[in-house]
Image (tube, rainbow, N blue to C red; front, top):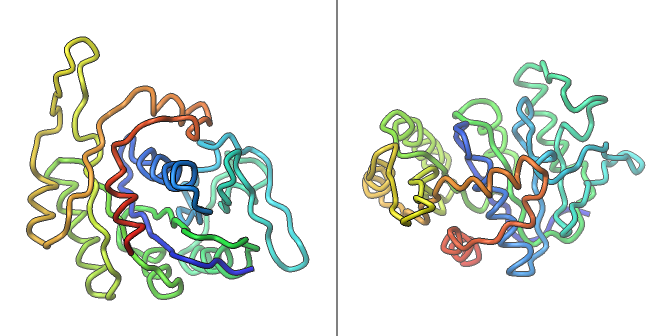
Length: 244
């Protein structure tokens, strides 16, 4: 069954702690808002999402289709790591093959009555991003970046690509925005301040959230227990998605 509802692409920069944004966002949408969600892992050469949900088995086929794996809280998931013989096997494929796999994950997977599908993207504006924009009915893009100047430049490329291809941008999320001292609660902006906000203002986009570095969130993800995390940093992002 093809997915119903919305398809949201989450463009994640490959920087430490970045994956947590998407996992935490999906958890809030699924558990706290009671929507049926799914993850299409389009990061074919760097698929890390199954591990974050403690999923180490393989997906199974049903006729000519693939049955998505379901997490403990009911999130449907399809990733290339669910098809490999060993999860540490590298994926050494050229661009056209990778693009074909993304299309198969969308069209040949038995998604079941999905309200919101999140597409996890690799960094950059290459083949995968182009394939997703052209082949999937994407309702919006969330772009995640850390505060540094260098990352801000890369984010601007992603913003321009989405605009050139008429893909709506839900907004920006600043990742690794600060770390909070466990003793006094003071926020330490170890990567600087304001760069993501400047980029948001330049392109007329909302800065939806500032995500801190949180050791507990990192530990739960490493332990495959991301669905157990409690927090409210991304409530504004969830609200923006539900308004689309």
